[in-house]
Structure formats: C-alpha cells, structure tokens
Figure 1: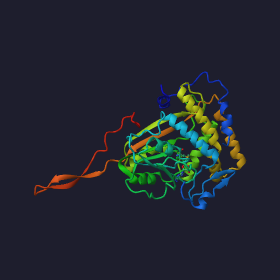
Figure 2 (figure 1 turned 90 degrees about the vertical axis):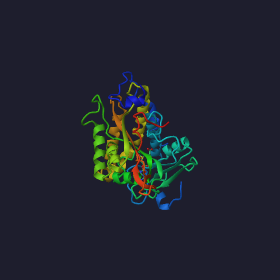
Figure 3 (figure 1 turned 45 degrees about the vertical axis):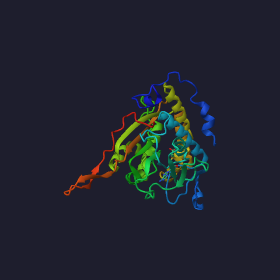
Figure 4 (figure 1 turned 30 degrees about the horizontal axis):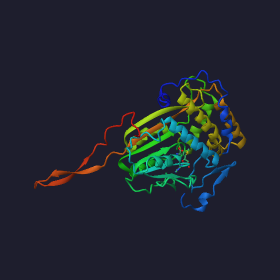
Length: 365
Ligand SMILES: C[S@@+](CC[C@H](N)C(=O)[O-])C[C@H]1O[C@@H](n2cnc3c(N)ncnc32)[C@H](O)[C@@H]1O
C-alpha cells in the first residue's frame, strides 16, 4: 500500500522493529541554523527573544521569518509533497493553467516548483514577509501582500488559487474565500491544504493529559482567543461550499511524527515530520505564548523542552492530520440564443453545469 493510501486509512500500522535510537541522525540537522520593490520599514524586521519576525503594517502573524524557520518550511514542503504522492496539488486543473496564485507563499518553494512544472502558467506568490529568493523561474514572481485586505487582482482572473498551512493566521476566512471566489475564473479551482495541529495517537500512547495533547490544546485555545483559528483545516470544506464553490472534495491524511510506521513511505514522511516539528517548535510557540498567554521566556523554554522530549520518544506513536480540500468555481452564466416573435433569436441567460464532479482519484495529469 502506498504511503498516501495508508495515511488516509483507518490506522497506521506500527513498525515493531523501530528500536533504533529515535531519529538521532536528525539531531544535528534539528538544531542547525542552517523580490520586488520594497519599502524600508517592511524590511526592518522585529525581533523577539532572538527570533526575527515580519513587519508588514499592522498584520499579525505568529511565525518567525528567519533562516531557521524558513528552512523548516522547506522541510515541510518536501514532507507534504511526499504525502500527496509526489504531487504539488490534487485538484483536476488540467494541463495548461494560466494565472495561478499561492497565498501566504512563505519561502515560495511551492510557487517556484509549480512554475517549473507548468511553463504555461504565470505564478504569483504573496506573503507578509519578503523571504523568497531573488532568482526565480521567469514565470514566477512574488509580491508583499496581506491576503486579509481587499484583493486588488482583477475579478475572474485566476485558474488556480493555492493556500497551504495558514492555520492560526487569518481572522476572517469567509471574507478571504469570498475574495478568492471573486478573483477566480469560472471553472477555475481553489485548493487549501492545512494542518490540524492536534497531536494524537490510535494506541493511546498520546492520550488525554499527555504533553503533546496539552501542547495542541494550548495553541488551539490561543487561536480562538486571537480570533485566528487553528482549526481551519476541518472547517475549510464547509466554508468553501458556503462561499459558492462546487465539486468540493476533502481528503484527510494522518501524518506520523517519527519513524514508527511500518509502511516505508510513511516512515520516511514521519522522519521528515519529526525534523519539521523539532525545528519548528520554538517558532510555533514563542510569539503566541509571549503575547497571548504572557508566559516568561523560561516558562516557554520548559514547555518546548517537554514537547521536544515527547516528540523524540520512540514509544509515542503520534500523528496529526493534514486536510486537503479543493473545489471549483461554477462555470459562468452565458448568453443563449432563443427565438423571438419575429423569428429571430434573442439572448437569454442559462447556467452551464460546473462539469462532472471529479473522482476521488482526480489529480494533476
Ligand atoms: C506556515 S507558513 C506556510 C508557508 C507556505 N504556504 C508553505 O506551505 O510552505 C505561513 C505563511 O503565511 C504567511 N501569512 C500569514 N498571514 C498572512 C496574510 N494575512 N497574508 C499573506 N501571508 C500571510 C506567513 O508570513 C508565512 O510565510
């Protein structure tokens, strides 16, 4: 069974021989530190306890934008691509997309990979942070932008809108989805892939009261307190349908933390995920726990150390879900000729169907 199939199954089987010192080969990597026209103030980043943060107007985003966190995002990109069976997306967008946007693009790695794969496409990646490379494929560009503001792209412009890992970042999802709907071509697609940050297990190795569950609950609660939910993955399907998208498909994947699955593909994904989590922990926690819960730096470091130890513990068979949702803007209303009293034809309105619902296995060709 492929890793992609097993990740969507009821339970991930555990590798009984996973008795190596849990992913110690990653230890070194884990701790290693490894454009456009801009206005100076945006480039004067803010710092908090030695970590660097964006400075885009009044926008608030919890993640650092420094070297360490950006490296972590690129590890995440690799892991998520493996999870989707080596694909960048699932929506059946056809072979010749023209205008494509990656909202909250981060390091821009998805946008650049997409541009390389589809030379026909003009790809734009937007973000609050100017952290994308300067040398990019000729059909790819990046813009500083807050996706929560009114969209300035033309209506009915995009063939494909992609969003990934924006949990805890957005105040008003219905508003963003309605702006995306407005700026998507009739027949065009949206795909939103997000992480459900609840660490859990099927064998109760990570159960009620476990540090990994307390960690999840802490950030889920903070998200609700900030008015920027971390639960968007689970809510995305309903919100996309409410925004008017049709043929909406949701797929849920269990993403193991560590090398504990017996399935070879999932074992690899779990190893990347372990690295992704350990390298991400401080960046996930620092701003939120400092500004929302007002914890001291020392308290935060203790919490991170406990979580780190739990993640590295071989007998914890934890996972969280990645939820991928895609949907289509209905085809436009078109004028259809109807006979007139004089025997001529007069245009009337009719609605074309949005096309057959894609099959569960639909994906990029
Ligand atoms: C967890 S990262 C994910 C990056 C990328 N989508 C990926 O999957 O690799 C979230 C990104 O969203 C950006 N972001 C957060 N809020 C945003 C907003 N309101 N408008 C644009 N970008 C935003 C952050 O700056 C950050 O780069």
